Amino acid sequence: KSDRIFCVVPSSDGDIIRAGSRCSGNEGFDFALPVEREHKVARVAPELGKSLRLCVGFRKGKDKAFVGVDQQCETLQSISVDFKVPSLLDIAASTPSSSASSTSETAPLFTIVEEQVLCFGFLCPHVLSGLK
Image (tube, rainbow, N blue to C red; front, top):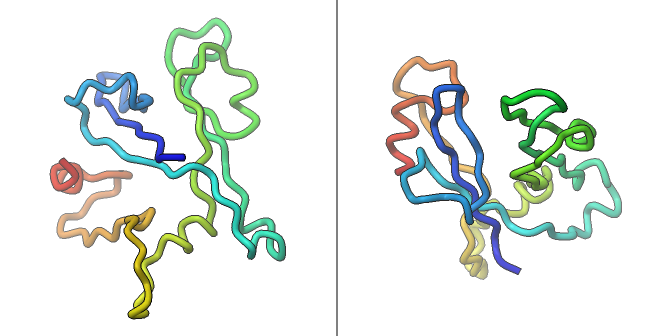
């Protein structure tokens, strides 16, 4: 299975997450999530392998999109995006190894960003410009 592609589109009401098939190429940025994987450690420490479900849809009687997490997704209508975020184990397993025998060709599920400018947002404007 291949990665699932998503994009983030700026709007007057805030950013909107869209599935790759609904992306036009003019988005703020895009990202990929790998399909779910099973880790041997998850059998010993299942809490580390837990993935949260994230979805975007509409609450009954509302016309503004809502981002739901886990159980909130069950109450939404017209869900346009629905995926599980990587677990702690997924993120840790994606960390590149320093061993010479490591031949992983996939990028880690995280990016380390050193902030040069004071910013308290999730993604600061100068970071977004570097993602394009």
